Length: 329
Image (tube, rainbow, N blue to C red):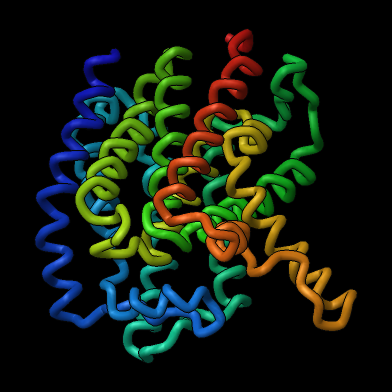
């Protein structure tokens, strides 16, 4: 079991490294350069023109790995790893459309917030309906640490689940604002899901996070660490958000997103606090800049320090999270 998961990570790592060279070359030909926020940190202006949509690298590598190594389980009627990947892929496609429009229009705005929300909500509902139809989703809300489950009305649970998924996807997207940040944090989260699924004998499902972890490792080490050669774009960050949400629900423990996604939550809350405070005080700012990583940048943190600290915090929280669910099975 452990061998197949290590193989999945290794194959995806190699594929990302190889495919990345071709993807990066094509992105440069397309002149798919990132437009930088005018209100962002001044030194980010130097990133303008860096190719975006680099998430295509690990998305393709993960998909190929999941299909090849998961072929035998699919012949046996096990598709949970494929469902997780396809769900994340839908969000990745939404991000791709957003990125492509930005590139074509040469500005930092693609799809409108309303268009994104509708598309993401539709994808979430489709996934939840499919999971319930396949018997992979229950309306028992498991509470980590307390080791209890609470039965919730199906309609209420589906509404709750849909909004948790959309919130999770956008929180991961918001975290992608510094070289390697979303990559590093989500790598740790994927390792958590792969290890947990393996220990719970959910080997087929574990193929997906194991492959994605390998892909993210290669993406970070070769292309996305500071100074980044390529950005993952919304293509990559929305895919990662979809992957995180899909795995939490596929493993029937959505509340685990609170500890393992603590950085995503902190980034989102900082943005909300900034907006609310700005409106309530008629123009004053709670943070120097939102989301949180920009505030810390303006406070003197380097991009490398941000990645190291945020990934480290995520690692600690993932260990604590596992202690909270270790007695479930």
